[in-house]
Amino acid sequence: MGTPLNGVPPFENADKKMTSSEFALKLEKREPPTIFRWLILIFVSLAMFGNYYIYDSISPLADVLAKQLHFTDSDIGLLVGIYSVPNIFMVLIGGIIIDRIGTRISTFIFTTLCLIGATITAFSGGSLFWMATGRLVFGLGAESMIVGITTILGRWFKGKELSFAFGLNLTIARLGSFAALNSPTWAKSYYNNWQAPLLITVAAAALSLAAVIIYWGMDSHAEKNFKMRPVPKQDEFRFKDVFSFNKSFWFIVMLCVTFYSGIFPFETFAIKFFIDVHHVTRPEAGFQLSMLKVFAMIFSPLFGLLSDYIGNRSLLMFFGSFLLVPVYLLMAYTHITLYLPMAMMGIAFSLIPAVMWPSVAIIIDEAKLGTAYGLMTLVQNIGLAAFNFLIGWVNDISHGYTAGMWIFSILGFLGMLFAYLLRKNETGPNALGLEKGIKN
Image (cartoon, rainbow, N blue to C red; front, side, top):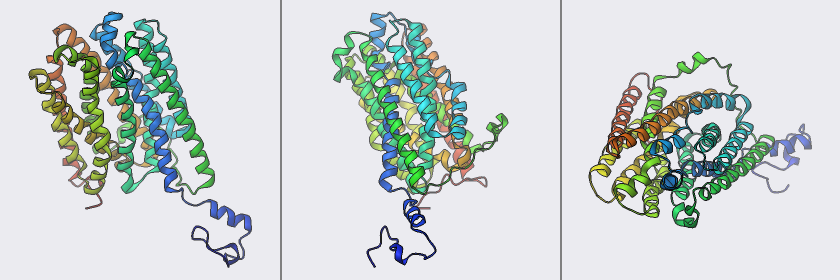
């Protein structure tokens, strides 16, 4: 009597003991539609778009700050490095907060801090103190926001979709970096003054907050109307539990800190380095650095799919670290076209994050996922703060960039070492399935 709805027979053919309201509820509590889950991904990724834009807004502005506000490389390193200082402590707490109060409200709070921080920096009046304060407040929210969004993806996507979802998330987020690094081209008139480009970062932060509010609404709707996989209850947190994570997790953490310490502090000074050493214009330098993001946007989802299919995740991360070792020395000692080393770095920047972050979701219990990502990001931020400060200081005392390039190259070698140790552990008796894929 009638056409089945969503594969469920009409009420007349259903269990006679089921009331109409119960039957309606049964129809409502279906699995979330596929399109709904991917829309969740799009909105949280747009939030990260704004986050990434703000973070990368200093690099194309570095030479303007040097000329108009007389900032040294140490000052510029401070503006970027101070972003990471609060996260040495806060991001782990943020991960615990996410596990305890949920991703919706916590991500909203962290994104609001990003907007406040961007606003303080933009309206600092050129004071290094107030600009750094704004960057600190931005960092206080930004990294915890990323942990929250990473946790959201880990709970909305599972199995064969996980790495691909992470890859798409990174692609959209890195569009923010691409837009920031190319802002000397599409917003050229803004670079006549140090403040105008920073006003764009306030708009980017507002976009992030709007996207998070939409996610909150969608997630609340899903909880009420769809059959959701229950989120495991977070155990009572004890600090000593941080050290109970398995060995593979710690190898991934060390690979994370060496990898990002080689990439992001390099980006801090890259445009200034390209202008001073390779004698290109600011728009050209911004475009060449943004090629790193272009490669990442294209290849991150593909590498995510590859790792889902073949496994061998530690081997893929080893290869990505290997690519980083020569690129800095090529730029320091040769006048080879910058597109070659930036392409090599772009492949590494696509490969390692697309494999590394979902790997944590494979080897860590879901109830501890927010804490695990928080801990991982905490250690990462120790490296980012230390190496931004260090490279700025080294550039100033050496009156050049070569010594810093050697430091970055050594970090690539250390990344290879930790990837090798991870591979050794994951092919032994204590393997946690990191090397398994659909194929095997």
